[in-house]
Length: 255
Ligand code: IPE
Ligand code: IPE
Ligand code: MG
Image (cartoon, rainbow, N blue to C red; front, top):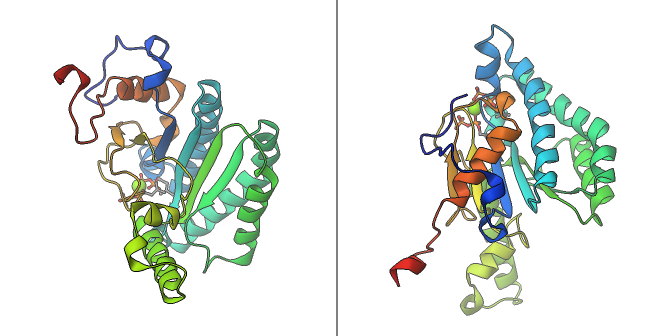
């Protein structure tokens, strides 16, 4: 199994104190297409396998006490893919909601969707709404699904909302703060991700959580998403636990 060059085989998740564990882990689930083509399969087969990996990750996150998992499931730029692939991905979302929603609800998972909703097909919109409505009062794992999500689009929508409040006299220019911006993004009320994991060896954000990732730790892993499993997840967390987060200050040791 190939992993990040910073891997420390000695580190285990069990050894680390709760205080250092990530509370919010976000995943850029990348490499489904390459997983499939490297096996001579159609790209869609990679997406199907990717859904199985996602189920493992959600289950494991609950088991190891992660509070929030955000998954990048479809970006605002993924509409640029061939129509057949987009149609397949929409079908997969539909199947995920139809097959997995009741199970997730039983497991006390609370689902929240982030991303633009304006131009979505009514059938898709209804599914997203159903997932949020059914699980709204659940108190277990928060599962944040980034669908039709692009951070720049999110920021534009947030800026427009703030501008409308200023124009309407509800908010003064001087009162605009970082909190105002955070509160007008799709992620309002969620803590920033402590850790972003991207699979498939790509080292970029691809328009994911640009505002929220200001002090997030990053873990890049060579595995294609369909091969990502509980062990790979544990390795990502062990990596996070070895980071010293300074937020522009100094190490406690240096003081
Ligand atoms: C990630 O895998 C899934 C989505 C973007 C929907 P990709 O489909 O991007 O797979 P690669 O990166 O082309 O291998
Ligand atoms: C990012 O992956 C989006 C998702 C994982 C849903 P992409 O495969 O779309 O990103 P690029 O095009 O390689 O940057
Ligand atoms: Mg990709």
